[in-house]
Structures are given as C-alpha cells and as structure tokens.
Length: 366
Image (cartoon, rainbow, N blue to C red; front, side, top):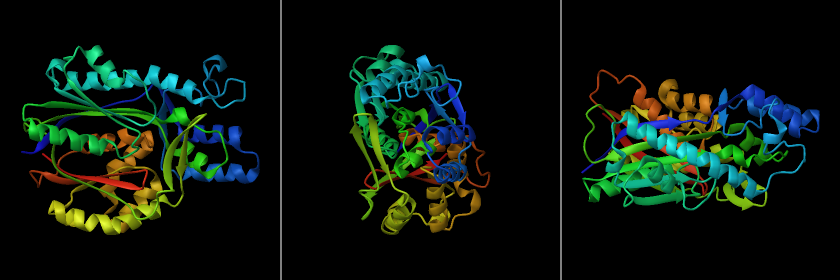
C-alpha cells in the first residue's frame, strides 16, 4: 500500500537579506586584502542566490549591537552554548509555526496525528521540538515521536521514508514530518575556504509534510520508493563537528565533482529499481546545495534547461536551508501547473549530505 504526501507547508524567519548586502558585509568583516575581497565578491556573485533568511539581524549593518550574537563589540566568536540558546528560543518557534500551518491548511485535527517526526542538524535540546509541537498544538500526548538529528542536508528524505514505512504497517496512521534548520547560527567569520563557502550559501527555514496511506482528494505526491548510497570518495570533503565556537563545517569546493562522480554508480541501478528511464522523469527535485551542484547534475543527466527550475528558484529565494530545502523544492513543484497531457508526473528527488551521502525518492505527482 503506497503512502501519500497530502500537504507541504513552509515557514521562514523574519529577517530577509539580499545576497549583495551580505556580500558587502562579508568583505568588511573578514577580508584583510584586495585579493580576499575579490574572492568573496566572486563567490557571492556566482552563488545563484538573490535572497536568504535568518533568525538573526546580526548580518545587517544597522543591527543594534546589544541584540547581536556575533557583532557585539567584543570581537569574540560566540560559544556553542550561546548559539544553541538562540536555537532553542527561535527554533521551537519555527517548528511549531510549520506544524500549525500543516494542520490549519489541510484541515487536520492535531489530535488525529498519530506519529511525529522532527528533523534538524543545527541545534539540540530536550525535551525537544517534538515535545513543543505536541504541547503547543494540543496533540495527543501518546503521539509516537521520532527525531532525526545531525544527518545534514539529506535528512528530510529518510524522514519521509520512515513516514511511508509507518503508514505501510499502520494504514490508519497520520504522520507529521517537520524539519527546521537555523544554519546561520553557525556562521564563522574567517577566510578559510570552508567558512567563505558556508557563509555564502546557508540560510534558515522550516518545512513539513502530512503523510497518510489514503490517497489525497486534492492532489499531492505518492511515495513510491527510496534509495541511498555513500559515494566512494568524499568522506573528508563534507562533514560537521561540534566546536567550542559553533559547529565546524568542512565544505570542499570539490563536492560538485564528487557528487556527479558518485551518480555514475548510483543513478542507473536506482532508475532501474524505480522502473524508469531518465527521459520519463517529468521533474527533478534536486537539493540545491549550491549553484555548481545543480549545474553539474543537469549537465551529467543531460537535462533540459527548465528541468531544475524549482531547485534553482528555491536556491535563489532562500539559499541552502539544509534538510528543510528539499521540502521547499517539492512544495514548489506541487504548486506549479500540472502537465495537462498527463494524469500523473514522475518526480525524482535527490539530496546530498555528509559522507558523501546521496538519498533519493521516486514520487508520483497526482
């Protein structure tokens, strides 16, 4: 029995930044030479990003210093504990807001949710966001709860996979999946390539979905199958660790090449498993980890220009919001007009993360 996504909702924090604004601010903050300023200008200008969101107002020159986490006049990088305090305060708001939207806009009674899956890699606390959602929405306190933590940008796909398995074993289940990521909390004001690339692409955001075994009356996605792999190379090119001053990220410039190299061994058997040929896929929902990743995937698959439109639009408007991003892409595809020549459209979703890990899902848009 297949599982279905009935609804996707997204939420954003209130501080919106233009990429040009962040570029010029970054030059002032960390560039100590004309060479560094040119490097920063190039990285930001070629990012494919126009705007990003943050729960912090720190990255605006007019931000009041007394409210600033990073630029408070002390010159020190905030400790991990201080950053995590902000995650607790602001993250729970995004989790609850997205959950509330899902219930209100799908006419779902919170008390009818049987399983809750939360996803995040940018902070920790207990009782966690699952507890906050249940308490804030008045959900049944017996709701089964699962948290997928610290997996990175691909984690929403395993969350959907778990939701599908739950409904397969319990056709009466109503599963809520919520991801919220506060990536900008882990900004590092340094000239290392990893720091510059991370600062140029990451933003904050939240997204969620309702998954059930019953076919949705007003359209949605059928969840058909999932697949994952770890590439032969790249374990040292994308990684997270917890440092004294935030999470330390390794983000190599070689990642786009490593990922497309990994697709050689991954995609053909996966498409065979899905019973599809690449040309039969109507839409590709590829995690927009960066512009170069989308360019490489499009070139490798020989996809037409508009095939990654949703991924490029999400990257442009919001940047990389880690695990929440692929749900933003699926939401945008769901809102686009359906091809009138087809009753259903085949969709392949792919997301990437530390390892290097590739996760994929075959969905049918109905």
